[in-house]
Length: 199
Length: 80
Image 1 (cartoon, each protein chain N blue to C red):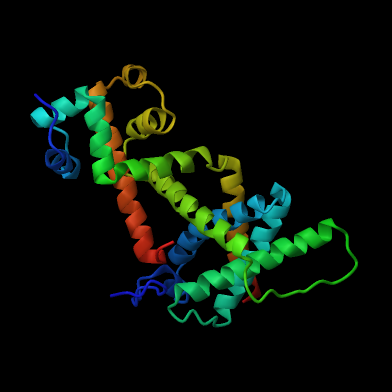
Image 2 (tube, one colour):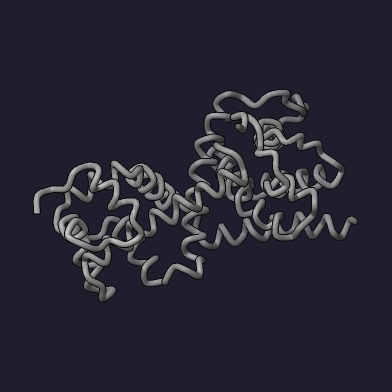
């Protein structure tokens, strides 16, 4: 049984596949962690431009680290700790520049502040559900009408009768769509957990 | 029909399609729809999805994030 702080010991996990340098693995990595790093920076109080700068620095550093043989060591803790640390460092660097301080502060943090860690877990969980929604929208097995019905009725809370009438489905069918979409999203979440580890 | 038991609702939630008398009852009974979601774990997932939807990134921001990430690998390829 897999230990809670470890990646599944398999070649199919995303982080391990990155070292095989597949474009598909990198696209998935960026899909998952690009928005997450951006959100963390925004939640730390940076404006959108600074959050983009942080994202660019973090991704460049991470890509370089993998290329230089960053030891992933199969442990999710190590990977998350590394990503948190470089993100936190970049956020701090931007804050220092904002303050226009001429003094050099501590360049490297040895551990992520607990408050950042808590935000990170929350943001990662939120980010994965958002990725599930994106994948639902892009899924070949989901009709665009069904996705719209799900968003309007189940996510936005529009009245079932109104949504059903406008999209020309029965109310019963609308309930079925909601049920099916939640099920699909949960399966996508489980796939992400298998690939990335639990949040 | 009377409201189905928890077990009947669980079976219904686990089925792929919503058909039959239990499904018809659920369609007409909002209390049973909520019970079925709670029993199946769908309610928790739906709450998370609603929160994620409300906090979603603007399409333009999402596109910009993709561009920044692509640039990271492009630079790597150019450097290599």
